[in-house]
Image 1 (tube, one colour):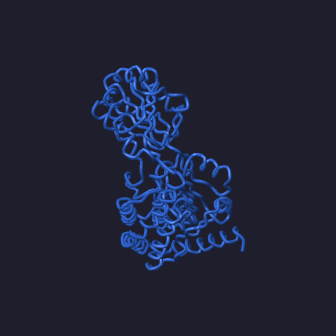
Image 2 (cartoon, helix red, strand yellow):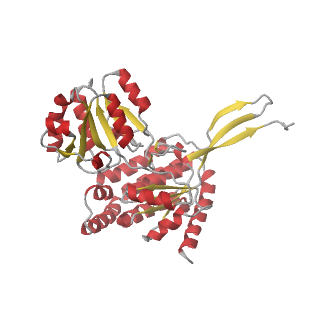
Length: 418
């Protein structure tokens, strides 16, 4: 059997599992999710040992920075995986929900019912926690999922996959609800992306180069998780302490993730007051500052920012800093360089805050809060399968509802069209 035939067999098993899952009901799905969470905690040592193998191999291969951070699991991150599964179990089940029902003049009742997408392919790099999050979200939303993680996390993904699949089966659901493709050949991803008629959607997660390759290769619909060139804009009316805390958190709390801030914009009127202390604090946290001319006049230690810096998702302890004359200039900068992921303003001016919310074209726009909150768990979604920066079907953190679509349902009493 060839590779493509093998993957078609996996997809067909997923299709059959999805049919059974669709009729399983909320109670059994929630029971399976709790069983998955319990199993992850009970077998945490196995998961950690597998992850240690991946991390050790990555270090030997010279992997550092954001990629190594995303790959690494510790006790807290494994516990968060289990917590997320339990939170998903507590969320309302969108499957079967009827919305926008109306009664037509002829008596027909027309509504829309939420239904699963079907069989979803997940291709992702160096994020073993995605294995559990994607499995949990897809199961609750009635979708079968085929998971293919990156070769750098193969041992972690294998261990997590085996543990959750056993828990699913023990709960009475078909094990093919979740399938982990362990083969690390790149050709596997290419074949998955072209399984038209077998997969209903593919969700990729990874760096810009990988996402661009997926988009140019796939013939299956792609729900794209874009990169995060995120900005924090400190307005002239901002509270200084609040501004410093938000900007510091957005950059430093976890710099290797897509919702970390990459550029700081500061109103010229407040720049001499906020930048010296803030940039000194960032420097103490080992953040490299790359600034515009005005920034370097205020903070001479900063390196000169280039045109490329404004457009870069660093995923590292690097921050581009620009002083702007007003809100208009800040909005123009974000419009030119932003990736449509997450943008924040710090201000005490209601009208500027509302204008920022209206005019910034991004999946998530925040007022007086760190961009690090743009996350499915933080938004009450339980977890997320990704953060979509596209505008069709779903945008922003994707939870249960974003893994469903709607179908029209019509109830009649014998009406015929004349």
